Image (cartoon, rainbow, N blue to C red; front, side, top):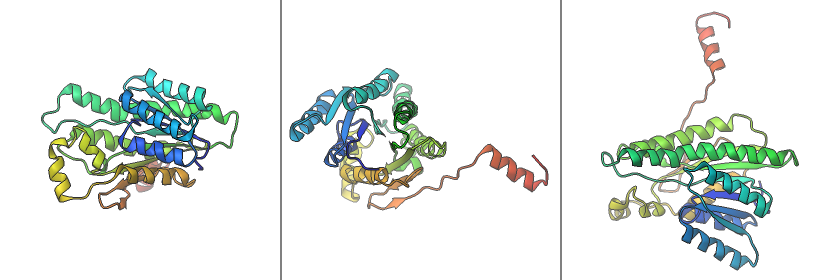
Length: 272
């Protein structure tokens, strides 16, 4: 899938991985809609992009992904500014205080931002993409989810965060097998990275972490995402990006009710 002349929606796009994604897409000839709650940083990024390109290539809108209306507005803006979006980056995410210091309110925010919003945005994206397919059946689309290393190897200090990211990994592979016309779904799950040091997840341990191991650069994570988007055969791919830059693919075994019934029938020599 070529990025030139496409439009990408990026949640959590004001900084970190999100801003790196935006800059890479712009460099490849695409346009971006950036949604975030960091209005000052998000608008500054968009202003910088448009000024450097001499025309409107990016647009910003305040987006709290825990609010369905805000997510819907992302797609409305993509339509009004660039004729519609072809790529969705479910990138917004939050951390949590280490257990047992996390409270109910914090844990619910973690689940709503990291998981529920991904689910809602994905379904809205399908509707948005399907409307474009009615006009051009050959058009291609992609959804890219931002996971986490702790989604494949749960971290006991951050139970709700790990749960939310594990669900995103599974959701990615399930949705990719639903045979949505011309829509691919993939996920990059980075381990410790420099941008995480700005969040509450590991802020208190930042200096210790930097002393004992290398940290991923958000630019590298963004590049890894775009590689999957540009590969027309990449669908249902979940890549966990380790701190040394290597990829590992977690073994998530897919199944269905029919296949499980068939196995049981064969085992017991019965017929369905």
